[in-house]
Length: 260
Image (cartoon, rainbow, N blue to C red; front, top):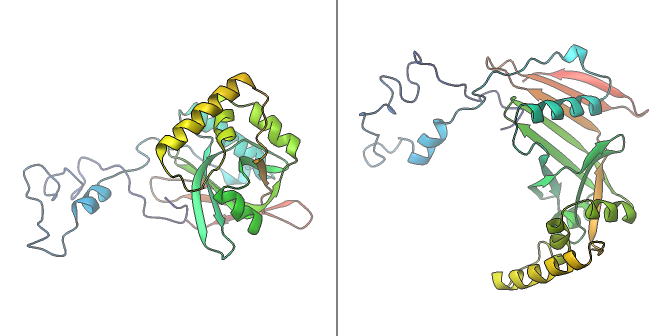
């Protein structure tokens, strides 16, 4: 769901005519489903299911942008802590968007490894698809979505590579499984068979247990230094709050409210 979208559905009420399951609704029990054969304009079963979904079926927090801090990092840390407290599942995962050498976009879900005054940190293999993209076009965007509170955060800016010692420390601060996965490597390469992966993974697990300090030279930590950070707070009446921070040339931040 995009922060630019103003049509996110709200939970249905019992007296809402036409709501899925309400009297008179085509979705109500006992009502025949429209037939695509008899009515070519009728929505497909997939579209009917899609339209029946609801978001933010919870009480959403308030957000007073006038009280927001001068820079985005403290607000990000506050919202992250509040997402954890609200029971948000995997709040440390984020969408990472990159572009290849021809400018074609790609996106995937990755894990946040840190956020500080240098920027937002994540890691991958240098030879992976995302690593190749960042080598060709070192600029990216991040997206966090925390539906438990109707919040999302968008971050974009140039990406740099952290020193090798940072990547080594990052790798060895993680689990044995993460080290084994890094030792397998070859991320995004064509895999001839799943059995080949099983053999490589078993060997990597054995090595990770024997050598917990083993190195994976292709493991790389990337740092996105934001040019722009947007905070989106959803509102049940569609009066969503969008606060954007844009970095000035002197390193300070300019804040703007955006129409939802």
